[in-house]
Length: 497
Ligand code: C2O
Ligand code: CU
Ligand code: CU
Image (tube, rainbow, N blue to C red; front, side):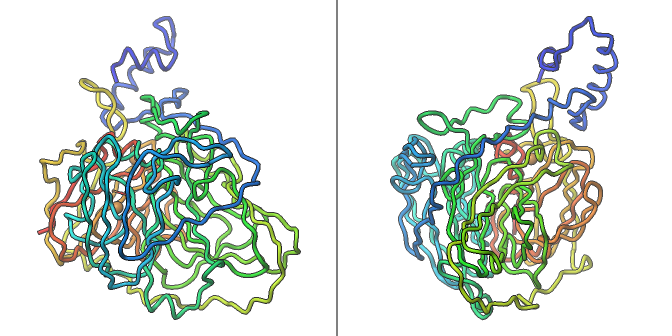
């Protein structure tokens, strides 16, 4: 952004006595992208307030397909809020794609026919698969062409997901509707006898900006800074829905599929939320909390119990206020969806103390440590305006940023210590364990044990992860999962060889 523009936006004039010092701090802080200067916090974006709906529409459950399926990204319509709105879908008349559900060791085959008027591709978020099946940003399917993704699913049971990843078009295509869940099951998970069938509920939380006819995606420069947020919260494609429950345990499989919005989830009756898993499957043991933060791209596997509640009780999954996430996030509490207790049942389920045989990696296992400066995610003076960067670089498909040796373990550090915006950092091709957070919240949160693929780095935080890089050689990207930041260039790549 040019300085003249900046001054206009901050509402300052040359007559202001404050101008001199503001300009000085603006210029000196420029190298670190310090956008949050005193009263000019608007530079970091402002909240987009949510308008709650009526909670009278039934929560839909996406259809389920297996190891072989066809997906056809297309312009279609979906009934989000009582009217058919123009959206993008992986199938007709639906904003979300089908849930893919397979057992570990399945070989899958998905034929993707691109019926959009622009390129797209699919990234299988969280899956450890070869680079040429991973939806690399320039490996795209052009309009009216098709491609069949084929790979072996060999990893832990978990809630993964899929979405487009074409360079510069990811945010728009996801916001307009392209996303779906990818569930992997395995024997370790089956042995736990977790609530299943209608007692296992997928919950895809997204915020959308709706017009009378469709989904608006037109971020301003400011909204590229904060990320694009919407005033309508949808769950599984429907605004402010409700679902009926019995007095028993439910397993909720939650994805934050929003472009930028972070949620601080809680139940309105302040009931316990028992976390049993996160991005890449079950944790070692359950963790009980009242609230938990979920950033874009992250997933949660939780147990909640409605036992003891009387028929007729209504309660909500809600978002509570939270601090430390910059000026645009956490400033408003709102309801997300409603649970209506409609039936009394006997429930003998109890949570086991050990869920999964996870071995915690020790920092000494790492052969190399790499540090990534993600504080510099605000601006560059000079040329083309503001850019979100990693190590002062924006994505360039022709440049390899990091060379990693296969079958080695590394520590990656995401340093947002000087930053003013939250960044959920995601690495393709691997899963990691979070070792440490300093600054900001200063500690790991309950859902950050076990295996993950996305970790939230709040302003002021430095987060250290440890990852085994296995044998899928090739080029993989890593990026901020605030999709506006990603498309703005906050993405680099590593070459595994
Ligand atoms: Cu879910 Cu590279 O993204
Ligand atoms: Cu991914
Ligand atoms: Cu970011």
